[in-house]
Image (tube, rainbow, N blue to C red):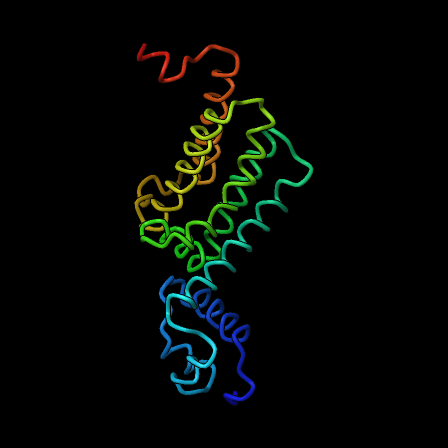
Length: 201
């Protein structure tokens, strides 16, 4: 590609493709320039630095994730939506390892702009939990529990820690975990399972 035909949009799109191809969240400007067929300095005519490029790729990753979750849960409510969200979450993470790893890596850094961009990640799951009539505080707790369960499976699977019991269906294990989440949620709603605050009182 000629440097004259280069644009920020083209650079970001190629960076996203690079992350998707490698499965790694790190973006090498040298590798990106090689893929584009240009010299590395030409990139700086369109982007300030690696952080700006990473944030643009991060924004794209967020948009794709949110679109994926909304499509999966559209027209569904409560338990059905929870299960659909969980399955779509796992599928996205497996099929988009690099983008998912990038999404998960941002909160560990002191980048307030990126953290602000990540807020839409909560919207779909919060919308689902609101259908149960939970208070804002309980939604905050339960969405954390739900996301921790989902990411926990992804992380363990990604690191290869589910190497034992190979004849046992891993998808079934995830379904059991999601059902445990729903059972706990319904128990609280019915008053059968006191919250942590009540147990400590």
